[in-house]
Image 1 (cartoon, rainbow, N blue to C red):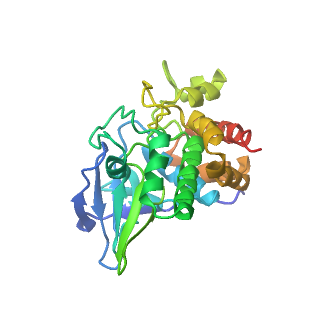
Image 2 (cartoon, rainbow, N blue to C red; image 1 turned 90 degrees about the vertical axis):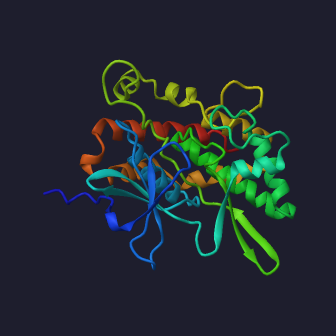
Image 3 (spheres, one colour; image 1 turned 135 degrees about the vertical axis):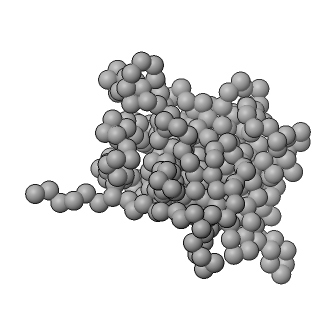
Length: 303
């Protein structure tokens, strides 16, 4: 007899835990808390016919495997609806200052309210803003290295939604003013081919797999960070890291070395722990193949 496969726990959200809706972003979600002694959680409903719940969880587990700072995520249900829950990290006096707020204060002409195709959301502008936010070159360098880790994670899981509200700085007031750090990586629901259907005409996981086009899927993805403000679309997460390692090699060196902690078997185990009825077999195969392709491409950048 085969031993039972370990699976991720499911957090069951009770109606009496609900605090308030979260207005930021395009997905329906709400904050909840079991008791005053527990941290708040953000429950997210996945968009219909997508794998946003399992992509959020798998991406967080991959981040954990390579020791990248990230928000804790659990699979969750609310009134029999499946979703994901993210533990709040903006507590105990800390507040999240989003990327659009940072860029608006540090980049001339930046429009923080623009929701789509914000071409000024370039990596150059992000790094320049971090240089201005943090007081010393050493702290600014560490902030850029942390951001580089998140971008390598995006490339690894194919996260196309690192827009200017999906990164930020955690601030806390202290007797001498403010202290801050780059916030943990969060909101990875737009990863791992979550939007594809399993089979059928058009963009399906089965077609990409059977036709050997996993690489094409990864390379043609349009991310939310632009290379030049004159570009019509954001570059793919993979291409962004390729170019960035040429322009900022020191910032990305450690992030790429962190990939040594990840092997195909670890990826398979992470994916296998999603409960059987939450994710199809073809979805699991696609996620493993995509992540392995991205991992191999990123390893080519390590000198």
